[in-house]
Amino acid sequence: MKVIYGVLCNKNSIVLKNMLDILSKDNKIFIHVDLKSDIEEFSEYKSYKNVEFIKNRVCVNWGEFSLTQATLNIINSAKNMEYDYISIISGDCLPLKSDSLIKEFLEKNNGKEFIGVEKSFNKKELENRVKYIYPRWRFNKKCTNVNLLLKIKRTLQIKLCLFKKNSKFKNLPKLYKGCNWFTISKDLVEYITKYLNENGDYIEAFQNSFCSDEVFFQTIVMNSKFRNNVYRINENIDDNIMSLRYIDWKSGPEYPKILSENDFEKIKNTECIIGRKFNSELDFDKYYKFIER
Image (cartoon, rainbow, N blue to C red; front, side, top):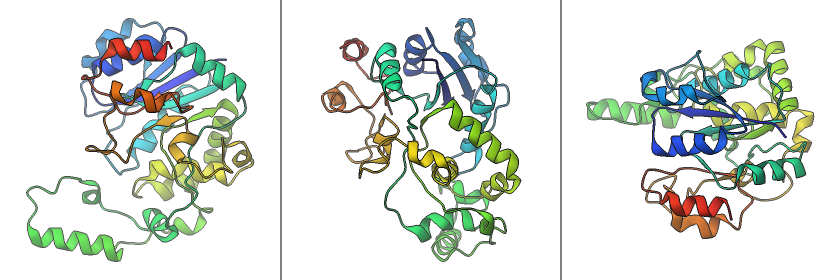
């Protein structure tokens, strides 16, 4: 079982180092560093034999197509390699099982696609993400230095969808959404690549959309024969679990919650292979004992 990991990150950290120490021993790793970040901060990993930095970097901003583009750049970098699965993860992720147990699970479920798909969602809200051409200020999560009148104008535009319509929207198939972190087979990657090459309008339709990273890949998969291979697709479970990701969007105080060793008891009762998010406060001694259990 050959697995490639694609890491999207914007900073070096103790979490990233430990993740690479674990996963790069027997797996190829492609790292996309946000163009806003100094690549030299990651120079310590250039000596890792299985780690490669993506040259075609993009400036990743929340809500923009840039996160989807960075994911595509990772996938394209791996296109000539032999592998069974590719896992897209963030620099704040850590494996929740040993590398051997992860591969054992994937081998046991070989042919399944671990991509999250929400079973119920607001169709209009989802379509509005792509139906309109959103200006860049739409993606600014910080509203500092913006006067009250402009804030009100922005809110009304968003609520009433007072934006120019996306002419490419009508050409899209039925939309689906779910977790933007996934583990999919090379067969599916090749299908996605072929689909994009044959449907030139598809990428263009998403380039000015809102949070396309949760829609772009799911829509391709669920309108193809691969929908039948999606892991636990007929069960009413969380889309993060379908993608084998443990992400706590409920507990807070951060959303998603910053995971710690106190979450291990809950995590061990799941099939999840990747956890998000962790930070430097994690007790790494307890973490290593946990994944080697």
